[in-house]
Amino acid sequence: MDNSMIVASKGSASFIDFKDKPPKRCLDIGTGLGLWVLSSAKAWPDATFVGLDMVNIQVPIQFLEHDIAERVEWVHTNILRNKLPFDDDEFDHVHIQCLALGIPENKWYTVFEEIRRVMKPGATIEILEEDAVFPILPRWYTDPLRARGRSPATIYPGAAQQPTYPPQFDTSQLAHEHELLETLFHDVWANRFINPTPSSCIPGYFGGFFSRVLSPPVLNFSTPPLAPFAPLPGVSDIPSRILNSSRNGASDRSGSVSSLLSPLTADGALDLSLSHSPTSTKATSAGSAKGCISPSPSVASLRNGNGTGAGNGNGNGTENGDKHGNDSANSTDDNKPSRRDCEVKSVGSTTSLAGSHSSGGSANKASRRPSVLLFASSDESTSLGGEHAVHLVPLDVMESQAEHSQFMHLYRSVTFVISTKEAMWEELMARVTAHDEELRRFGWGDADYNEQSSRARFEYAVDQYQSDMRGRISLWHSLVKNGWELPPRDPLSKAEILQEMQLREEILASQRLADTGEPEPPCRKVRLIVGVKES
Image (tube, rainbow, N blue to C red; front, side, top):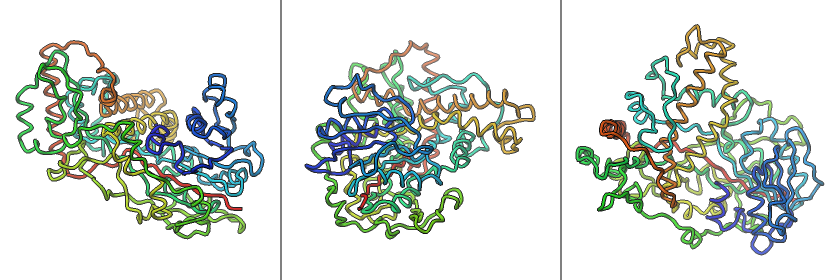
């Protein structure tokens, strides 16, 4: 998804503008499916590429076009255990993406040292990493569902049905419905000595090995608004009581009742031409995006150091901040680069920030379109390199993305959380084995401190989180906005329709009561860092 976003916004798979002199030999570490390699191979027809990963999941070479296949190679190794299987000074450009959450803090020195070894003098490197974010559902969304014993599948097609294993405790005393999973999610990183916020720690390590460092402010992808409720099969109009409820102080707000109901045409058919938000009704086409692509600092400016005010390898331009873990990651060799951590701060918007639809928004914000991204100014402390760093990311293009693209960012974050399921289970079993009393907050009794009972509770918690998040993400909405057909639903009885309408009213009423006028936390945090190996 990020690769497609970069290509659409930059017109290239790289944030660095190589102009008419693209690199001749490139290395992609943590290549995954190999999408960056393939898109770059099309853009740079004279370059050769090596995609490196631990597992063999790349597109088979024999299925690639001949012109690309002869310039691409897949290599498999574990960079934490083995040296890179390449010669010294071999590559002109190195690309790294989504690798940091697999690197313990005490391994960054070795990793960057080895990467630097295989880079030619003057070679460039770019890293795009995201923090480990656990998306949280507010009480106003989950409480009405639990009160009626319903699942999001009743109001959003595609959501999972309610898990069958019954909860055995009252969750009202928890910070939120899924606090157990959030606790285990954070345990995964803490007990593996992995910093869950690489946006704060990587610049310190990076600046010790590379020069002319540029890094824009941390990009915070805002939590999406509450999507429209799916149209009910067999219902061609909206009950007047729901429309009337929108006049009780909510009709002129972003996220009002009327804006959350799917609009209908005159003949009662679903009108998919309008966005769910009254402040944003125009999607961004690929053509319009290409027409406003922002330029990047050229590779020449990186190598010459023009305009860079930080990250030159001597420690200037970064601020010391909190460190994750302990000081065992610090180097004790005087000849080794020192570790420097950057302070991570919440990034406020300096552009068009409106209240999150999902938690409500004040009336004076309703006239402004909520930004897909929350940005900081160029002098924000998370930025390295001043204006040159800010220009690496085409903020104007990303901000102009259609609002429903936010749901895909939330979907990615939730998918990442679910991918750590077995690691979270290991953390839970460690607590069960130690007879951790904190588990009683989450419903554990004396008879539950065993593997069988704990696994049942864990599976229920994961299933419930997936079910709730599928409803919140409303993937059907994003797909329909991108031209897909609305998923069909079985006909409902009059009693079922009435129950669904009541549930929808309760969710909207709960949202209005919980409105604080403050946006929800971002669902993703991403950081870009580029630099050069000097001779």
